[in-house]
Length: 165
Image (cartoon, rainbow, N blue to C red; front, side, top):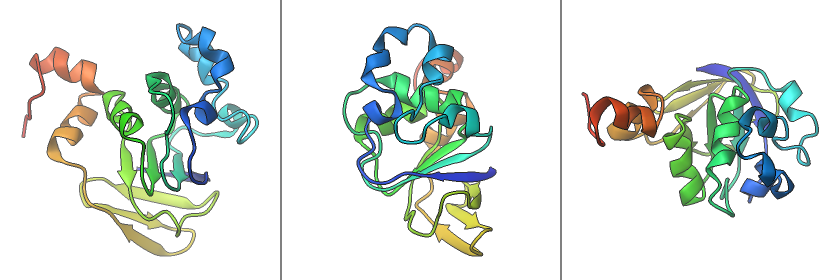
């Protein structure tokens, strides 16, 4: 996975990702997705490119347990979220939606840096700064859920949580 980094700080909540005032759009995901990060990075949905990364600090996705927040991140073409830590429910909602969430040191990534993520190897290359960051690889069951397209597709395929290794 290779793309550009969009940098955010600590304590980005689900309300920062999708402002609560758009709750009424939760059954219209394409319209809801247009409002992603609208206060943090105006017009983000128009600027982001398919394959880009969100890079953040501590406790990304804190706040309410809206699964829509992870879904609209993926709908905007983000291929993975890299953060120092995640709110537990948001972290799981990412995988349930088929969106990789990687816990790593994000200090070596800047806005616009070109990154390549190697999920299986547990490393990220920052081509803009010629640096590599290592992380603990994602567990096999989570990789399987991702490769199946998320939890719903995984359960449709296997009937429950199973590894096909």
